[in-house]
Length: 383
Image (cartoon, rainbow, N blue to C red; front, side, top):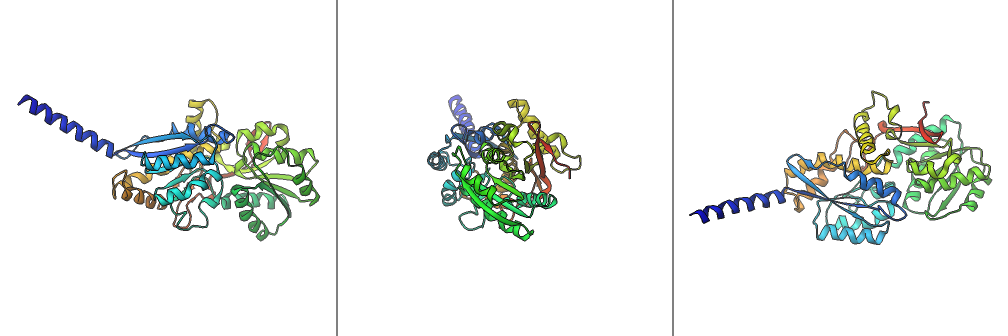
């Protein structure tokens, strides 16, 4: 009788353990914590430590891999997360090329991907391949609108463009050029360079020869400092504008005094001490910035915010999806995708997000500001 009772208790415990395992949501994370893109991947990996461990009554497990900035490893790790770990969603990978390289596998597996990347092309134009992907940074259109407003206020009529020769740079030119022309500006030069380049003297010579009033650099972090510094060295006197890809300490560290005066449109988290009390994002932004500083000893770059905000989006979507399916099932993943797409007026560290069937980024202008580099740090431009 005693043996039977013990067996019964063990069976109950085993069932409880089984139910607990079934109730656990598995989220894969791929971050380039080593290799050339580590300046992006390290803050993304660090930010995982700050993500919610529970959503409603469901535990969340994060399975984190480093793809070493190698797009082929991104693919291999994505397949591993899908087939072996049977993840319910993926955060990552770092970098636009890597994310675009794995997108089809998430679509085929009908598993949501929350991509903390720069290029809008990952979600636009929306189609069946992209409907499983959500971008966790403000769209190029939102940032470009801020850049054009800053250019207009400074009397810019002609613009030179230089960007990466990859999806980030191409997406930016495709977005910015028609918006600038609509605002009455003329694109007088259009140049590209590779992320690994150490010199852009040829491109700089063409830009200066076109005599633009202003130049827009569509690069990322240290990669954006390269053309800016060489434009200064070549004697360019116009204003140099930057996308939010330059919203990083690495941009200032590498560019040093040459990037003083650069104008960057990015999120309020760049200048947390200047966030007005009325800003809807203030509380969440400060929670992320102060929490990251406390844990890692430095302010988080914008790249980490994309991972943090992915966690916030999932925190809201998971309980809703759980009403339609159990974690680990196709029904749950489909419901999770639908819940993410249904996000309305959600405050994140970078802005307020409202998704739709045609907009899988969803950030509005409320988290966007114009900053400049002054005395080696980002400072809010109040104009």
